[in-house]
Length: 75
Image (tube, rainbow, N blue to C red):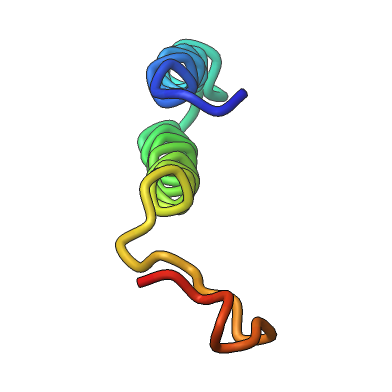
């Protein structure tokens, strides 16, 4: 279900949202503020999601069950 393509698909979606924020930001004296705020928010959310997703996809520490009896634990 979870694979490496999710990261690439998410990146494409976020890149599209950034382009849309660049094009459709309201015109006026605060246009640069709108653009930078939206793009920064999209990129920050994507990075947080990607780091969390990758940490769960390939964990550094393998979980161990503590409720097993010693004779059933294989090292």
